[in-house]
Image (cartoon, rainbow, N blue to C red):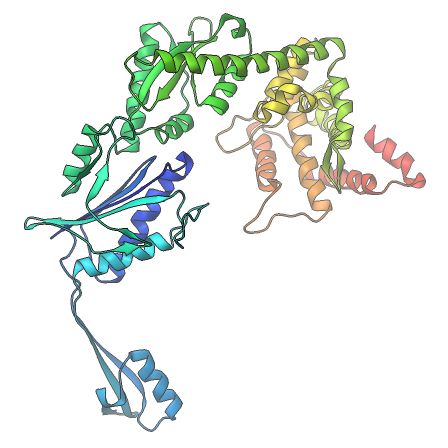
Length: 529
């Protein structure tokens, strides 16, 4: 029973698409083989920045011959009915048999399909898979019609068995299948031929390519943690970043550098976010102080100077990035201490939350009123809850959050502390967005709970009031997440609330905000108080 080896060699595939693409290739090919009568013992898919690979073991030599009897209409049925049956069965009237049973005489077609060699089926299935591959984004190049994520250079398609190996005859847009591949772009020795998957994997490793993404990730983590440990430091774990970096390199070379002393006083989350988002660096912290003091970067090439030149270049770019972050941080602290967070809240009057729900400032007013109403129900001080709600989203106006939106809330806590606000208010600035998902922690501090509930209830009632409800396939405003957040806040904190009254009151606030006239002004002011 032969084994099948497929490699699609192209320019660099975006890291975020690689894992899904390997699984799609596996599904398209194996499903196509089975549909054509070719069963197999096992299959595995792999991806690197420049290749998608599939190996299928224990494949049949050929599909089995089949014989099918299909009953058609009666012999005296209308001609159109008989013609439709003959066309569907792929036979002529002369090839059919007339058989009599209790209900009459019917036409029977005997459809015999001879077996087909594996190579023929593989070529057909692989061409269909390549031409219909479900890339999130694809491109055309040259004069051909083929679409791929990046220009496709080579197709390897080899059937191997004890008797030997053979290339599957296939050509797509001038790219002819073969059994040739190549290793690392810079450290490889050029093109070479392979005969089987074992030969392919071994020779790729010699050519400085680790085929398995899991093995590349393990190599990166092992080398990074060892380098940090040697300096009494720790690498901050980030599995998402690890998977992404493993998709950026074929031969990972781990390098470790230090952060300039002038940036060490920046909040650790700012350092982590800047290094991760802009340069795909892992953060390295001092366990004694919890400060971020270094970084780990992963190169795709070995150098004679052991990466010194690469590190020097990365340090220059990192210093520029962190200089920006330091500038934003110092400016924001100056505003928070001098003007207070309320100054930022006022600026949100110029930021539209939704064209039917007003500005962010309008929303803050509604949330503050609702938080004050909820506070006694959750054991919170009403004045603190209202104060927290009024400044909880102030950091949306800060320069740091404008640059790094994922730090919203967290920076609010830092700025609230800098402005001298009560600890409960600062905590609510960070925690009122939670829980963001099933694995996110649920706030338990009373003021944080009051503001978090008010925020989520305002979101739910607001979008319901303007008839922007989620559907079975779409939830653009994350209303399901908000509803689940309300449920978790209530359950985890053991609350007993009349949520229906809170919903009704907040919907009324939305309706009043949507069209306030002079007769309603007094009612609006009373509700907001």
